[in-house]
Every structure is written in structure tokens, then in C-alpha cells.
Length: 148
Image 1 (tube, rainbow, N blue to C red):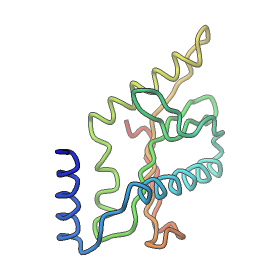
Image 2 (image 1 turned 120 degrees about the horizontal axis):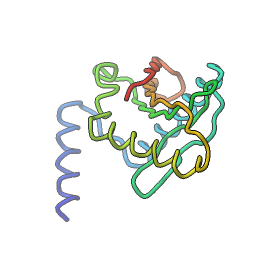
Image 3 (image 1 turned 45 degrees about the horizontal axis):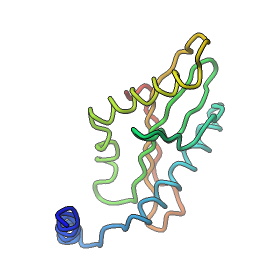
Image 4 (image 1 turned 180 degrees about the horizontal axis):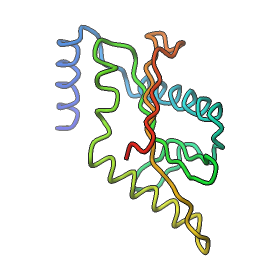
């Protein structure tokens, strides 16, 4: 009940300050899926081999796991619809807490999938994507290597 009340209050404030209704859960997931697909294509063009997408555990999810040469790459993808502040706040949701979680998930993946093998070098990257309002064009894509 209280959670729903806070969500409604947040939605009202968002509408008041931006002049548009906030995206629904389904719309957010749709934008995220589109962004991950674009990021996967981008990584393939950069000669990465995609190993997994949306690898999930009880503690969280890694958007993309890829190999670049001998290095394992864990990628967090952030996708936004174009707005006045989208480029300024593209990576704001990757907080210190999120960074710790990504490190934990990367180590968990390595321990689960690479037992009895030497651990490869790995890094955690972030890819930020800004889409046009109709979600059909990529207006901006930024890849930060070793973001975490």
C-alpha cells in the first residue's frame, strides 16, 4: 500500500516537472530490451563475442557478457529516451552500490562457470544509449571501458 502511494506521488511529481507522463513498467522494459539489442550489435561490430545476455541470479542481472580477445567483458547497459537532461544523466543510475553489485555478480559468474580453470582477466564496462522518442533511431551511444 505504502509502496503504491510513493509510486503514485513520484509519478505525479514527474508529470508536474517534465510535462509528460512517466513510462509504464512495460515501456521501461521495452526501452531496456531495445538498448541491450543495440549494445549487442555494437559490441559485435567491435569484434566482441557475445556469450550471454541477461544472465540472472537471485542477487541481480548482468545485461551482456562478452569476450574481447582473452578478456571477459561484463556490460551494464543504460538506455534513455531523448530529453533535455538525458545525456547529462545517462550513467547516474550506476551508483556505488550498483558498482559493488556488478563486481559481485561478475565474480559469481566466474566462480560458477570457470571452476578448475585459470581465471581470465575481466572488466566491467558501461554502454549508454539515447533513443529518439519513437525509439527507432540511436541519437547517442557512449561506451565506457572499465567503468567499474
